[in-house]
Length: 79
Image (tube, rainbow, N blue to C red; front, side, top):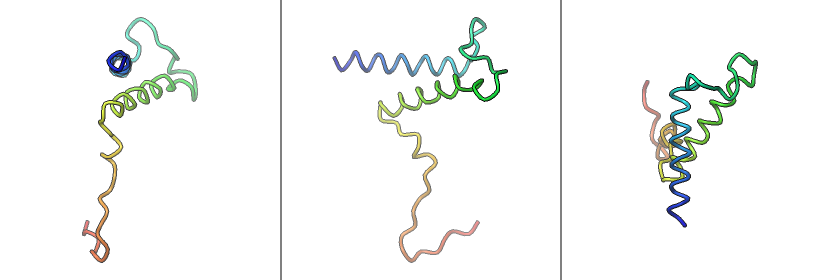
């Protein structure tokens, strides 16, 4: 049963990735981008599905944007 769930999550992740690379697929688009505010919701939801699929398989993309914490007493780095 676990492998079926893995296949479904992998398929959803691949479908979301393909949709993000080719948003209109030259055939259909779920929500036209010309609609104010809601035009980008289909791409946003595809991004959420893709990030969730990565996280399901153990790849936490949010760690890419995490700052390294300094030990107490260390001065901040010069920029």
